[in-house]
Amino acid sequence: MSADPLIESLSAALDARPDDLPLRLHLAALLLDAGRAGEAIAQVGQALAREPGSAQAQALMQRALGGSVPPPPPAGPRPPAQRPAPAGPGDAAATADHDPLAAYERELADVVPPRFARAGDEPEPVTGDADRVYDVEASGIRLADVGGMSAVKERLELAFLGPLRNPELRRMYGKSLRGGLMLYGPPGCGKTFLARAVAGEMGAKFISLSIVDVLDMWMGNSERNLHELFQAARRNAPCVLFLDEVDALGHKRSQVGSSSMRTLGNQLLAELDGMEGSNEGVFVLAATNTPWDVDPALRRPGRLDRVVLVLPPDAEARRSILEYHLRERPIAGIDLRKIVAATEDYSGADLAHLCETAAEFAMADSVRTGEVRMIEHRDLERAVREVRPSTKPWMATARNVAMFANEGGVYDDLVAYLKQRRML
Figure 1 (cartoon, helix red, strand yellow):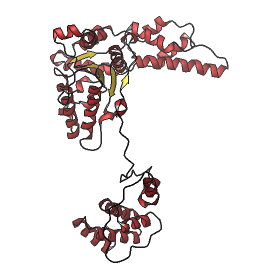
Figure 2 (cartoon, one colour):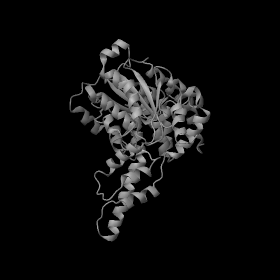
Figure 3 (tube, helix red, strand yellow):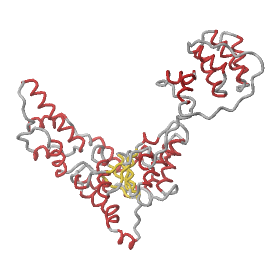
Figure 4 (spheres, helix red, strand yellow):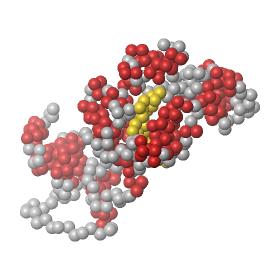
């Protein structure tokens, strides 16, 4: 509370009459006299929001920000307002040079965004792909670039690629070019890479969507952002729309305490159903590490109704990944067969980190001895001892889900894999 009774009284009166501009400016002047410039600026800012052309408010703002105070306007009745002449091309810059608010906005541009738009500030309209808030990419990756994953590739061929390559058969069998598929599995096993490969195989555009592309602090903006992403995919059909970490966007609504997140989940369901526009030619691929946290409504027919388990790479895939990450490094005497056998539970990201670590060991040894040497088998063996597989914590959680939460056989493929590994 203020120590000045007059300021207290004026503040209370202003709460009852917030549109009383003379009262607000009088309070701002008293606050400035009391040395409370921050509160005065807030009051003057509200006054300028209501009447941007107020000379008294502009003078108080100059005074609050340490500028010189222009003489007050002469007393007496104001002349009648005159309609301004049309602005010419050079008038905007001239106005900004003489407008104290424009000067303040330029001075504080890194801290406070401009409050008022002026003539000439509007961006020029653009057309085509440039009129996209989100990146629409053309993927150059093919499924042949993905090592292993034969079962996943076969499922993708049945769901998406086969119908696209055979339009006459598709029409005969009534197969739609809309649909969704959810990839799940341990982190770092290539779900995003696989989605890009599907887009490249189709010759389709690729849009990646994550929670940071959607969430906004203002009510309704998150739903609008999600709608705009789907609209971009529809405009660029055929298009693969990749929902990364779909559990963040479509978490189980029964476990979500925020009404805004529940509304966002409902918007996602509406977009997948095509209620906001036709999804013909839009292929929705989603990825998650925790499918048990995804709202069951997302897995109903016509949405993300097909679920595919993406497992850690098998021996053939691990060899391909290791060869890829060692191909441009100086290597000598490496027995890949032994390294492949020692990295059974490693994800693709783990194998990349393994090669990086082995290169660090060889480089550190070269720096220490002053003699450059190749990356050798001993470096990779040492890296295997230091870099542990990141998939084991996920497997422990997945084991509990497979044993106690496999309603309707959703995770039968996971159960089969765990039994094969003798983890069940």
